[in-house]
Length: 210
Image 1 (cartoon, rainbow, N blue to C red):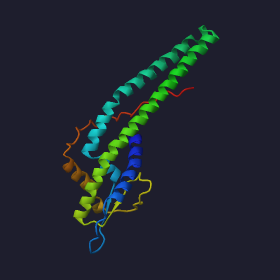
Image 2: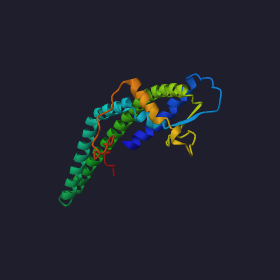
Image 3: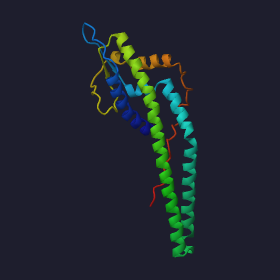
Image 4: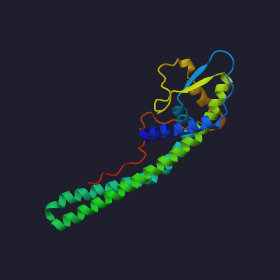
């Protein structure tokens, strides 16, 4: 899930920032020396309480599909083991028929997995876009209040963002923007997860068809 989430966040981030930059008015630059800040925008969006809540809700929504995929995979595994165990007792036609049944089930499971993954990614992007546009507004307001003349996106996955080779910790406003957004949104922090709990995959892919 982390890989899928990172990809969606990376792609959506560029869309949101580009649109926001085109639609938001550019404030007049204050007199005096430039004041630059750095923000990991993707991380800021992903770490807001609102995004974490919506992401958890989305995970729950797709639990039935994960369960269905696991059931399909278990059925295919059982059929393959049965075919292996009975191979020497079956005629060529029977073996071919059972092999075709298994292959058909694999293709069905693969299509179901791909459709579920596409649906999940689409909804993930909608969630990201909804929160990201509001985080950008908070970022712009915060930057103006603090007198920053330039804010650079230091997200490592940003495909077309400026590459930040060095930034003093004092210029990183990521946490400050996250905190400001959480206060504005009013969404409480999600319950703490056990340190040993591993994140669940978005969708378990079905075995590849042979």
